[in-house]
Length: 232
Image 1 (cartoon, one colour):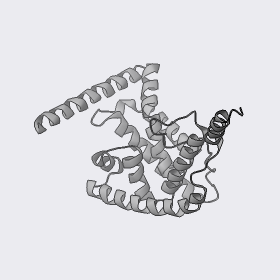
Image 2 (tube, rainbow, N blue to C red):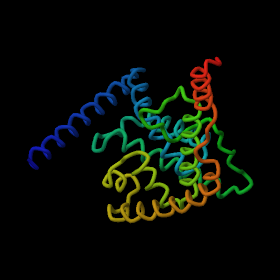
Image 3 (cartoon, rainbow, N blue to C red):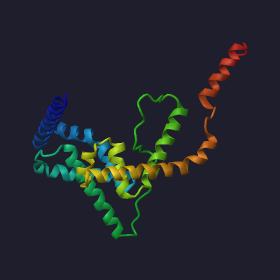
Image 4 (cartoon, rainbow, N blue to C red):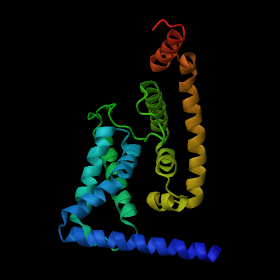
């Protein structure tokens, strides 16, 4: 059974490499659809990786654009030893870190504040987007996690985003960050501990407003009672 699973995994990886190489070959022939496919497939992950480094939405977007430009200018350097994803992650990570280094050498230049328009985390499946209360609560939770992650030291934040937000494996994270798998595990453990502390600190005051009974829920109950009393 184990041998079969290993064989299936190798087949899947081989198929993925074939798809990657086909996309690269098409892009080298200047096929617009190939470029679109690459970007649409990796945009969100690359943005999250960049955002985890620079902690700023607009700067992260600029980092990803610049990384794409560099990658597409050097498509011929892609040899297929790794996936397109890993190749692009490394370019984005280097670009983001370089952006931080340049900013630190010029302290008079400050990164612009992040706008509220970008959500780093997606809503879980099944959220009722037609329920304003639930949608607002979900956004508050996601924003809280994002802010808490921003407070993590760099070495822990990068591992947390790669493993928890992106769902990358320990091995993939180790390759991306060029560290040992054991280091990934220990840093993730520490990141989760620090994140819990940060969220506990934020969530205390919010508990005073827990379980609100307003909006659609309040209106629905009121309407139902009025109907039963024949007072509509």
